[in-house]
Image (cartoon, rainbow, N blue to C red; front, top):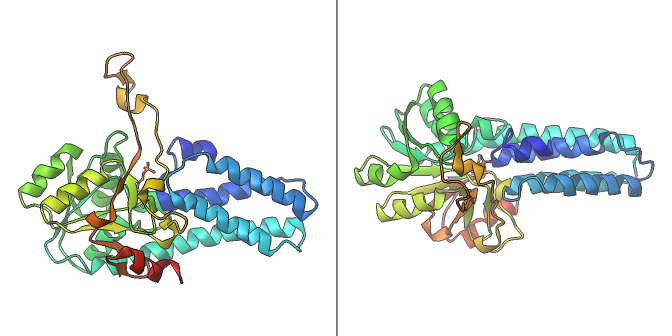
Length: 311
Ligand code: MRU
């Protein structure tokens, strides 16, 4: 599971949370522990190991904390019973995610009007969750409600989640989708083609600063310049209550080869220096609203976020 997460075979914040919950179970499934204290050591080791796979998506850490909390709750029971309960909890997390996606989609669909065109980045659809997705759930639900809509999908360099995943998902649902390179977003906005930008999130700080796929911040700046509403769509498990603002969000840096190689071929000079952060942080003052399963929340986020996390 560590390898699957690291190599992006499973990716997208909510899917990472689900994978981490099942991965934690796999880590303790064959534990020979007889007492809770021994079991706890194995559990902590599994959590630490999986936590080293990817640092940015908070859902991954949130899910493992929830599994740990369940184990603590049952500590007076036999170890084999606790193991069974942890598997059940992982299944609960997965099933809940399906419902959360549905709810995010329903709440978010309200902001989309008949004939709107939406710009999205990376992939925040079914391939990033166990259900409908987050940003794409909003689009799917608007379509289900009978609204005729169009989507521009950023290809999302370096790994092309937009071209490979989002464009495919939207096409499967019969939604008109137009694929663009990331550096075309500004021009498309200037031409007046975009009504809203809607993207997912990997971690949201308590002031609303939001980490998402690299390139999201540039889109938010462009949207502000062109006076286009910029929305984040994310479940409550993406909000990190321990982080005040975006500066403290750990940003994953990935291998240079993701930028220097394409289709097995090297496309840049040998020994070239590369900087490859997988995510960036969009400051809260560039965000119009955050669509969650509870409601759409608006600035000041420091206050409105509590509607989502204090439940
Ligand atoms: O590197 P990835 O593909 O895991 O990055 C995914 C994103 O940035 C998504 O936008 C985010 O996780 C939200 S998924 C509902």
